[in-house]
View 1 (cartoon, rainbow, N blue to C red):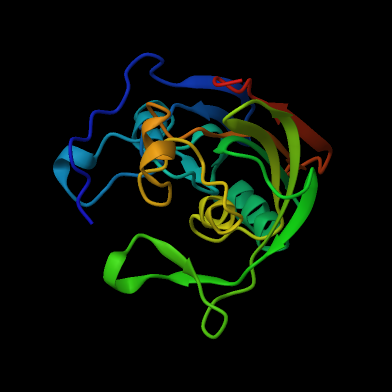
View 2: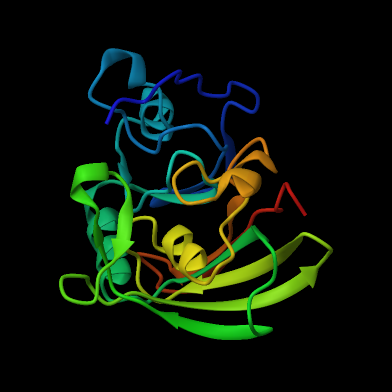
Length: 219
């Protein structure tokens, strides 16, 4: 699917939260691709910006273009293999913040809905009880106002668009979501209000537990 009107942000260009000889932790702005797209005009991305300076950097996981927050890179293939294996085994702990329309039915809960690609409308995903892959998200309400709620989200699985589809299914789409929000929720924010706030994982060499946080810009 073509990215119409791709204008990646230049301020901030990229914020480095941590770097050693084995890994890099970066804060991605909303509107920037994690990796280059197929078209030349979609080359600008977190990956291309990082590897321009550090050519050995390897991507470990991705964030949607519209999502902001913490993204992890490995420095070299050995570190990439170790970190990727952690993600496959669901060792890292990921916490997102999202501002959603309305309020969930409970102050906290577990969303367990299988997801698969909605092929005629890709990259959209959908709940599918026959063909979908298991997908689980824990949520907790942080604050609520007259029209929206700020949620803490902890995905157990990492399916494409998982948080966005799960919250839509809960009746509380994320504000600014062009794929899954109804018109009022989409128009309520200038961007997707989803932020990768915290990431915890093991260092690929020392195996010490590391925790990084990124302030949520829409609190």
